[in-house]
Length: 109
Image (cartoon, rainbow, N blue to C red; front, side, top):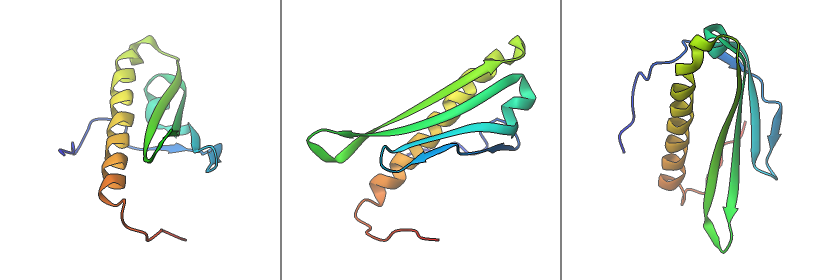
């Protein structure tokens, strides 16, 4: 697997997780400061869902959704790069889960 280092994008941003549901396996996080909001987006919300595959307990489907409102039409090219960024994160997570699936250790705070 080849990971892209230094993918262009916003230098920094803040998100606030408004939904973290471990039962439904859903996380929703609107961007609250910086990032795409400084580049012409009026709002930007990332949603991640993990769905079980029926009959296949070791497999799942990961769905990433981006909901946005543009404040400035010139920001339209950033839509594709933000989708690619979310896709890259999902690939890294999938790779991590696959390579560590037999590790029974859990991370606790």
